[in-house]
Image (tube, rainbow, N blue to C red; front, side, top):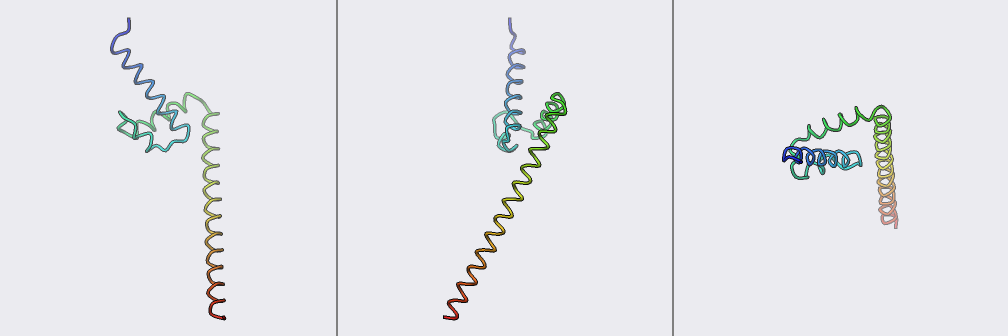
Length: 102
């Protein structure tokens, strides 16, 4: 027969696994923190480190590669926005010159 303590432990482990899976799926830590019963961000990071230690070097290397990919994607997006801004500024300057010249 299952006791109340066993049931709570099972529920807590399920909750912990759900929160960890959300983080590993790419959800922002803050959005995971908005879930009920999770009060401390440090706990979430601690759980993540425990999970990564159990899963071995393959999981860690994949996480590093994903982080590098995300960083590269951010750099590419920033470059596109810079080029768009420069293009808009150049078009605006040409427009003002044509208005001035006539």
